[in-house]
Amino acid sequence: MLPKITTRVAAALALALPAIASAQLQNLYSTDWISIHQTLHSYALAVDSKKYSLLGETFTQNATADYGAGLGVLQGLSAIEEGLQTIVYGKIDGINSLAPVDSQHVLSTTVIDIHIDGATANSTTYFSTNQFGRGDYEGEVYHSYGKYLDELVRFPSPRAEGRWEGSWRGVEWRVQKRMLVYLGPAQGNVSIFLASS
Ligand SMILES: *[C@@H]1O[C@H](CO)[C@@H](O)[C@H](O)[C@H]1NC(C)=O
Ligand SMILES: *[C@@H]1O[C@H](CO)[C@@H](O)[C@H](O)[C@H]1NC(C)=O
Ligand SMILES: *[C@@H]1O[C@H](CO)[C@@H](O)[C@H](O)[C@H]1NC(C)=O
Image (cartoon, rainbow, N blue to C red; front, side):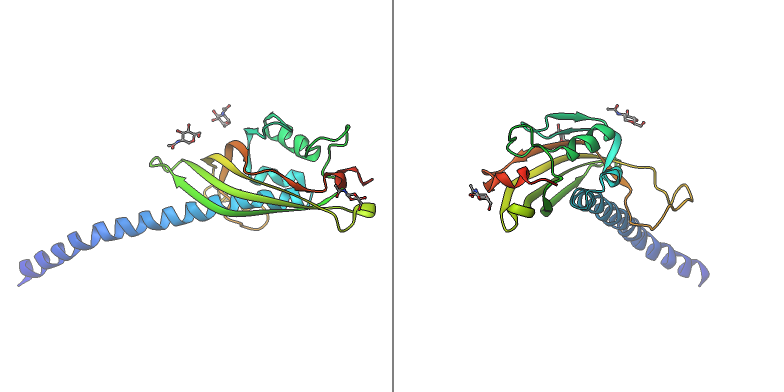
């Protein structure tokens, strides 16, 4: 009886093991997907709250961000933080800051491609930005549309290192390389950036 049961158990295990392995892989994949999504979408919170130091939740220390015509290529996290504080939208006579407006970055379509190495990923995230004038420009808006093409790397997990700093937000990935591509022309009243902040 015993060998028979053992054979049956072995057979059952043989059937179950690939399923378990595959379920674990799927779990890992889901966890990474969610982490990458958090990393990408944290960007909007950092920029729209004007808490640029939070950009470290999105980019690596040595990330490169190619923002195209206005800002050019920013090399390194501190250059990205600095550059975004003086962001140029349709540059008007030296007035080139997000400071005079309220903004909302709407990140929508998000397609994430985690590479087979499990340590790198590429993603495409569509954005539209709504920028709202203040003061004399209250009620005026400016919109731009585009996508971020990102290359991400897995970041050493605070969980793995046994130290949780602040709340756990599942941010384990960072953007190493970003390219911004505008889709369609910007619309609205670009003069809102002239308001005194
Ligand atoms: C960025 O920094 C990481 C970790 O310090 C390093 O492994 C990687 O090679 C660097 N990449 C570039 C493009 O400098
Ligand atoms: C990731 O994106 C970069 C830049 O577009 C590209 O050169 C690279 O081949 C992509 N990697 C994969 C595995 O698709
Ligand atoms: C922009 O807004 C200002 C203030 O409301 C207004 O005077 C100006 O005509 C607007 N410009 C455009 C192009 O709509």
